[in-house]
Image (tube, rainbow, N blue to C red):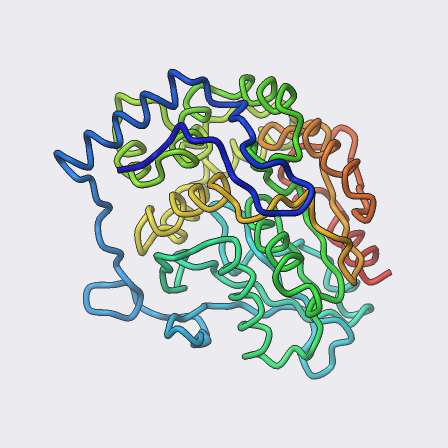
Length: 361
């Protein structure tokens, strides 16, 4: 049975324990608790087993992969200058619905000028990387570290995360800070339940989301054991992000999504990302990002490396007011707010070049 109405308990120094849940009304929490308990006793909703790449009946393995210490594989994609010639070596953590082929999209001229080698990877359960039923913020950081070691990137490397994939960056700053030469996050998704956010502000911004997104996040946080069941019910309010219908206030974002859906790219990316199972990719992403973290990013000590954060002020997926608050709490975060800009930062002209030049400073 899932317990959904208990207050959070955080162990980080300076973070009060027993913080009340500001974004889930008590009736909603009680309903989720009752529903989760009933489902566990009756139909016991379980997601289907993943179709693991390279196994009988599973998708083929076509990408290069490394084997992790626990036996899982990570698929990766290398871009930029050859690793042996690189001055800067970068690991890139893709966002929700993304893949190993994503990047900050720097120009080839700048990549060559700076001497940048970049490796993107399918995060666990995505694309051709094996699922991880124990996926967490910590495991995301350790996957990055093992990938870097397997590819011989040296004692320190740079790390860039975009959107939801930035949880791997926060994890790295918490669990492997001494391995990071510099970090950048582009429109990083926030968790409304991080205790560092003022309760009234988090609740106010949370309430402005589409109803389906509010419920998808509530279930992800309070009752992750029924998330797959919930998301598969057409009669329940579910995520507009997964459906690709979230209202986007920024004109460029709206045009990009419209084009991707019109030419079939949106569906193609979804099929590639979820080919081993939507639960192991999209839904587990939601459970990790919006679940109960072991730490609050706003209580992290200053890391031994520069950290940069880019955020558009017209982002329809990540509330800029929460990002501003986070940046105000962490004096060591170099915050770059982009006026008239939305969420899809990798598509902003020349921003990829700016990110690299700034990161390598």
